[in-house]
Length: 218
Image 1 (cartoon, rainbow, N blue to C red):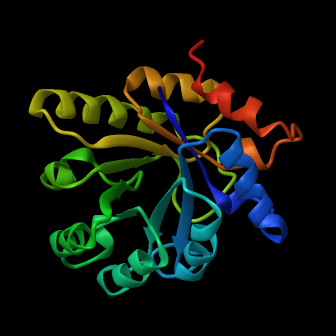
Image 2: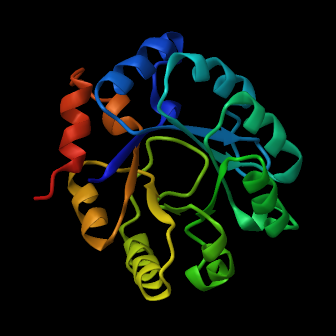
């Protein structure tokens, strides 16, 4: 079954504890935390403190997406805060292999994220080392952006590589996900869908209904 990772970037931050508890109780598998530094991307969001605050209130996987540069010097504090998965953009650090190795040594799952401007063949050398590969279907930096349909082919390519080489990474899609494009992503081989505005920004307050709608194949 497809896994859902609500992005707290779109949640009501004044009521974040209850927002996270609601999606937890609605049956999500992951809680997605977008970390931006105003350097790699033109926005600033959360630090490791938000991971530390969320860890005691949910047993769900804390899926941390680092949109920062450099990366290596921040791994330890996110691990210590309680992250279960740490994904980063390989081009944002001078030594991606060292970053992956440090995440693994910390008993945390490493992942890479693929910017829309980055081609799959630029990151294939890391695929056998990671547990998660995030396909960005928006330009990273801000929530609420429109889904970039021209990125869907990357899902198919990754799915084929995974099958042909017997690799174990999960394919996570992040950016502008809604009920309609969720189906396309699942058909192409997605394992995890990150959804922010679709869940937290909806007029429908029934989070369980919204979450389950993303799992449905048309």
